[in-house]
Figure 1 (cartoon, rainbow, N blue to C red):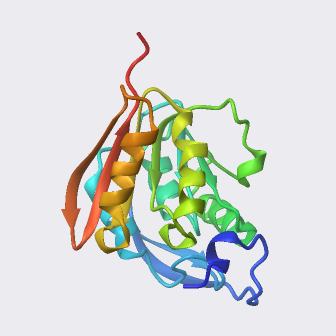
Figure 2: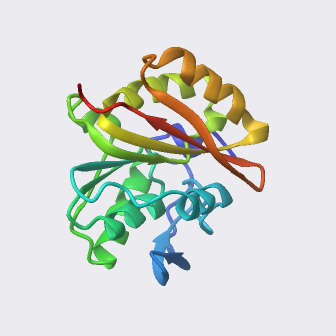
Figure 3: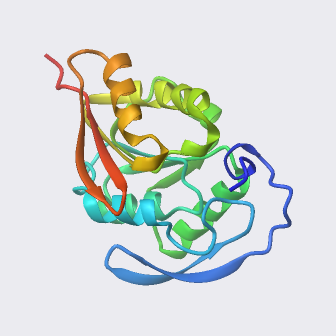
Length: 205
């Protein structure tokens, strides 16, 4: 997979939208995707494992899908927590447009899509779900996570899905080393060589 899928605001491949049938929230939906984004043909295995292996997000407040692609995680969060505001963040403007349009197709009015720099840096999130872009390289990935994980609200939880052979265990150790000592970083499951990692910020004292 080309790094373009993650870092190009405007992919070089032509936008040719098409519909796919995908299971979200217990129902099969027809949604739009396009080339030039992450996993345009289906819900990728890692995302499917995340969606099937974590508890419901916070029922209210701000929720974050970090690297939203065409929207499977953001849409799932929005369906599970209709009283919350779900932020779908991506550097790929084509991905943002698809997530916005797919939310409209599903009648979800609690989804906000935005480029990372458009989000108020003071905003905090009760839940973060992410299939982070491991293939962008360790340095860029660390920079990304150090930007967003500290924005967890007190008592907030981030759930990340990472392939074992792409460094899930070393990423877990790195997060333990760089996040505050009172935060919890743990592996909660392994499924088909994917790890689900849980990052929890303690409640305010």
